[in-house]
Image 1 (tube, rainbow, N blue to C red):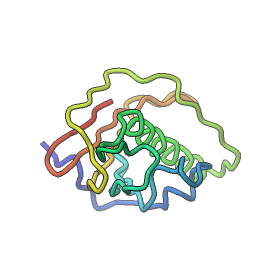
Image 2 (tube, rainbow, N blue to C red; image 1 turned 180 degrees about the vertical axis):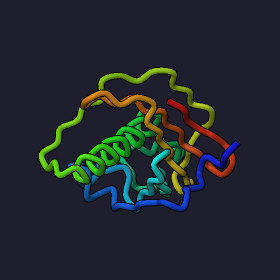
Image 3 (cartoon, rainbow, N blue to C red; image 1 turned 45 degrees about the horizontal axis):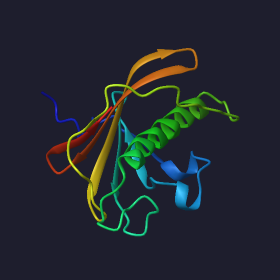
Length: 140
């Protein structure tokens, strides 16, 4: 099986925050994402001052879904802008088969990995994973 976090040689990169309308506390992801035609990968560290970090330093599960959603939005905007489209709106329509395998804490280094499983017109179905070290901590 191919390493889910390695990108192929034909990798394209882009700055995630340049593709998202989110700002300040609601921008949960930041940095350079990599795309190798099969998947998009973003490595982040959870900041301790995030509004989604509980007093015990655990990040709320909802925030992890939002992180994957933001990466999906950045991926969609990146692909559409490659095709010359500038004004984009995207909506998260549903989430299914979500598994929270382990807790995530402030300071954790995570890899967010998304793969398109279906693309029809403006509709995308995405499979996402959040990986800490060698452990998949979230699947959706």
